Image (cartoon, rainbow, N blue to C red; front, top):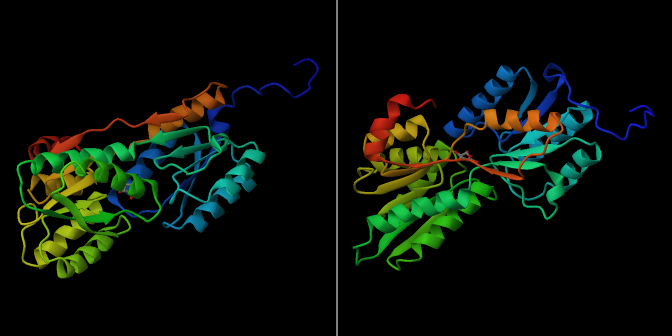
Length: 307
Ligand code: AHR
């Protein structure tokens, strides 16, 4: 304004002058790879510079990356937190530097909601419930115990906590459904395989595997086949994500049901940044729309699947 007090908004920056720092979890799964590609492509399309870092599934690396973005004076920071807790200090540093933070995909567990402007991503509890609903229906006429093993995502990560919670809540409706073993496979194929191999030895009669993502389910398939059993028949498998390899296994009858978790968050993230840059306000919570797939639906959907 005329007085030049600096108290009013500076107005939008040209998009080609904006710099956004994105701190990614890692490259642990097919989902994550698709998510990274989609975000990078969306920013390239919008003509906005994106600085990208891969934390290799370690919170300390992600904190370092965020601190470096603060130091470089980026305009916005977006990140997908490896785990839920332990973010207050670094997010307060971003706040003090006046850099708005957008959470993508995963939530932080903090009492202070002013530490981020928006959280864009799936409702993981709902995903767990959808997996539970399928299991409930599949075994509704069973009078005998159903032994379920759970392959958990990264310990402390929002999707691991919430997918376990939503599932447990739903299957509690039928006392025959029991999770007899539950262990983390860290959202990786190798992790899922290793945990499943051990479970096949320690659990005599597994009816169903609930894996928190496709990759761990695909690892479990390898372990089940190596044990001379038929995945999808001798042992049923329910997973979350619906990436191409998962959908192929579903179409092939090796997985029985997949709950979709969409990694395509790039366009919406760009939209949030552009809105903020224009001085607009964004929703505090933006929930991704997603569906579920049976084996028949996977056969139909596969040809058009982008990732
Ligand atoms: O946070 C989303 C989860 O992280 C995906 O379901 C999983 O595949 C990824 O590693």
